[in-house]
Image 1 (cartoon, one colour):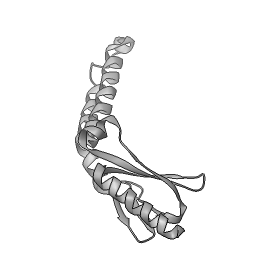
Image 2: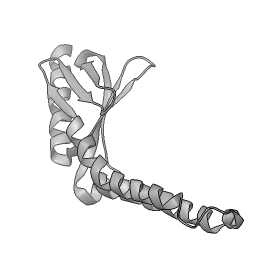
Image 3: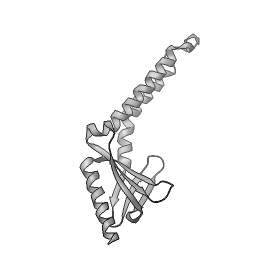
Image 4: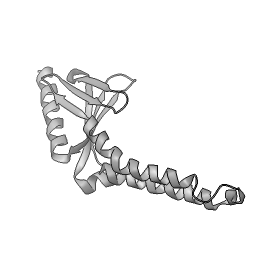
Length: 143
């Protein structure tokens, strides 16, 4: 799914690069493809290589009373969401995610800064299972 999304973005950028290369700047002494050629090659390599690294950079763990999420290629981000702060939980799917049977678990928490914490790339059933586990633990805290 990440490769499909990266490929779509790469194709749009490649089309823009080629249009610029063929456009009004064509009267320049720069040979055709001197700039767009390496950029196209870089975009193709990025669409093939980057999604796997992005996928492997994500991790999560459901604890007794909080969810731990870790992600990031360059900057490592570790987020802890206490279940007591959760206002509501969504399982969302875009059109590409739906085709691959995956979705995002989104926890909306109290507060304004970073109040929505997402966990992408989960199988739909797993996202719903985690949602139900968190919901049951929130209800236990209320009793």
